[in-house]
Image 1 (cartoon, rainbow, N blue to C red):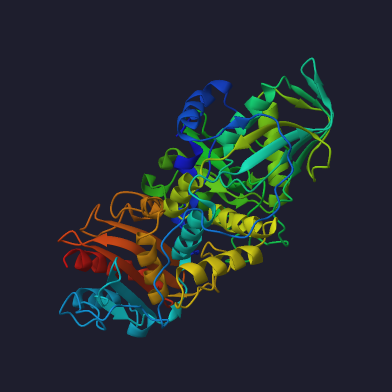
Image 2 (image 1 turned 90 degrees about the vertical axis):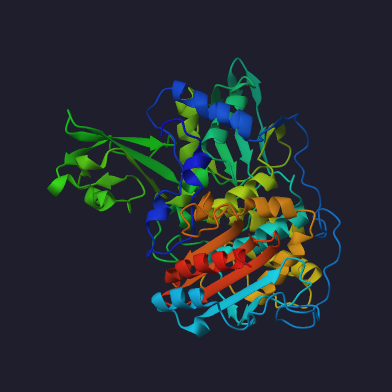
Length: 547
């Protein structure tokens, strides 16, 4: 929809494999290449009212020395647990149901999905951890939790960094401003902002123009050195390099490295007009494609009908056409040459705002001795975590994960993120088997955690100062996020994070019981048929709600 905020259209990015392609395409960014400045009024209003972005007075850009990781807020120490299975007090079980056996309705749903019993782990326990688990089925088996791993990363970040943490993108120059021109280079120094989307980049550039800069007589240098990452192939995970959920993190991540193409049928002209969002320079893009007549006036696979060619980093082509019966649709893609995305988008949007650059827009580093111009702050971590968990945004999670490494060592690396989470885990969930967290997002074949460890972490989180932010970030069953279309009858009665890969399915979070009791629920399945476990998870939610 024109004018709709980028977050509303891009964030539903449930981590998936090619088995579930639909969600990847509706999970990404949007904005227009050809529309006039009037179309920005609503997004700007949204940005001003909903996005916490701030300009601070010019100051020294020297980063403080890295400090040891500490919890952002004091919390009670988690009780020690002697084993890697679910830790419990020696009290009577909350239900007469045998804890080692799944409810019959859950077993039946798993059988219909052709999932073997030993492929599944389930834990249901009171949030206090003061009673024996209601269900404890293979809780000590390490499994791939898919996107449910995001709960570990986001909970750790909330406690280490604090819910009010923000990322500051700094703007500096080695020249002087006079008569509307900056005579010198402009430096844009990224700090890992997970949500520097199109609307917020527009606002950053508007504020820069408010400094009296319309023409940059020099280069624009984009600095992403806050993260030290090895070369990463976007196709490495599932050979789908143009899917936005495979976007690679970056200290200066613009619009999730994603471009939205909006197809608008013009029946009279016999074409579908194409709008591209955001504006992007140095990438040739067709403005129309032929309209197609389909048998029975059916829409069908309109993406396939377009026969898109995206491998050429200089252009996107369509060798087919767009079915007229499909109406208006959007398709988000991650263009080839992702390392060129930030310079192309920064320049494209700057020129769309009427600005000029006489030199190049390029990647580089910020030299010492430059003059600060302004600082642009991200939304708070509390807001970012909500976007991450509600819609399972992979690249945003990795931005947070790398920030944990940066907080620890002064530069963001995946190994630094893993060390930060490992230290935090040992302090907050001692005695429980630690997760193999990999990249922090769950978009991994190697990530592992036991259901028992995850359940214990959620029990600890319940008594944490950041519990409200963590719980509010989870999808609500039948209401929003990745659980909006849940078939559970317990609509509105559970906050649960979901995860799906081609061979993994999981849920984890909190469920309200019939008598007002809150339950921690963790369920994971690893097998070739794992995506078929979702009906079993719905049945599990309903069973827990009745307890």
